[in-house]
Image (cartoon, rainbow, N blue to C red; front, side):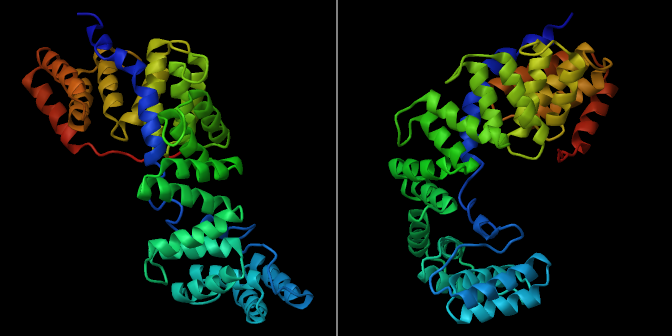
Length: 385
């Protein structure tokens, strides 16, 4: 019967990448992403950060410097002693650093209430990092009663001082809570200009969808490319889709393959399995890369082993046709059956069922039973880089 399996669904590849990517640009940074653990502002060279503060004096600045030196050496008890000494004299940087240490349990028993108190002291003196972290605590209810209005107030104070994390958090709040896309775009753009890669993905998605800004794929491609160059896997995946479809950039399958490969190699991001699947299909078709069934099998398998239905379908096709692998009807059936279990697309389900019926007509009952058992016992794998 030849390779009749191979062409059943390949036309879907043309339509999948960009729409899927733009959705993931939002999903990947869903509610709470800016404040899920301790906010990024807490990271300096080794955790304790860094701004000059009101009420600083040469003496208290010296105590803060000593605290930092001990902190870098991971002598947290000594660091805490010097930070506390400066903090008690009103040094806002020391107060912020005490908040960090109480929040992380460094040199002291972890205590979010104490962390919030020290953040508040620094925040009230205008320390932007403390304002952002205090906003995060109000948002999550750590050490304080959860209060979204207070969270937004402190995010805004920090954002207005130019704190990129706060600008991102405020933009995300306007997008997801208030659905005020114009305000969301304004704050996300501010964070994006400062190099925040997640904000760059978000504002790129807003330009692509025309949310809060006039739809502009060239602007979308600009912001996605900025994030992609920083190694953001979701942006890399999206750039692959834009080059594949010629949205905001000149259509270029080789460039599409380049960006899909970069996203695919990250292995642990939400978009990586999709990138692995599409890159495998590009090798299968010879789009942007030389046709190479071995490479197609490698990338499709990576995605299939994570439960990606389309990759499982095409891996089944390759086992049926003996492309890049030894022909094996049992494995063809197993992967196709798994694709049916994991697919949520009506059109895809019909194609998968068609292939399962065709396979059963070429297999013995014992082979079908073996393949079904293998599918039942199959477990997805987590891909590393």
